[in-house]
Image (cartoon, rainbow, N blue to C red; front, side):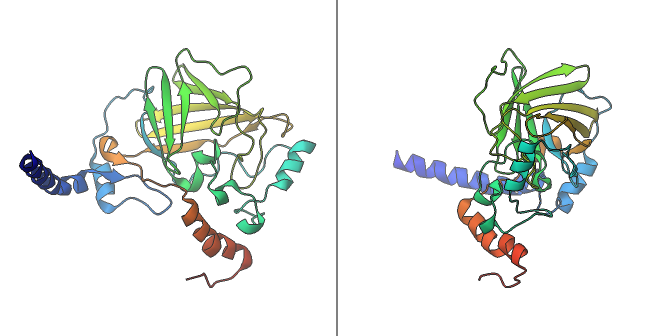
Length: 279
């Protein structure tokens, strides 16, 4: 029995060694904040054949927003008094109001879940959509967080318990995939600038696959507790990462121990002007 295991082990190692060069040539990573794709990946994407026809209702694949602006602009609708109070209480690590993490309360500085819609565009990272008859799964490269969008008989509860990524249902309106969601935990922020939302925030996303490689999104946020009128996003454009079948997302978790080092040597220094990071 032992000899059989040894033989199988040798066979498996040989198979892996033989196939490693194939894997290296056929698996490509989507872009991330660390930079663009390799020359080999770009060449493979350029050579990947574009079909003459495609299903506009197929949103599956890895999508990359590149240099998209924030989903919501830096100029929101006027705050309510409660909205102004919450906005002033948020101390972000980015933007014109940035403070060092030691003095701030940005969820990203503690590796807390970013929630939605903030994780949709964070640092230009990718997201992947996987479809089934009853739900779509949207997975974000940052922390590999995911949200469920139900498309079957599931409905959002009338008074849902707040969740980091909310409760969402989707349906097709012609060639537009419409997602309605609510029940978001108000500990998350709308973006990295510290714009708040309440547990009563309601989002509507309208997704359109305008060509084989391009997915567009317009989102409307309604939160009368925080903003005096709905906040409509700029149009976001995402590109399908090709080759579709051999592109994967990177693994990009927020690791508390690593994040602590980053805070001390990058984020805190940005707030103090100190150019001598710890060794």
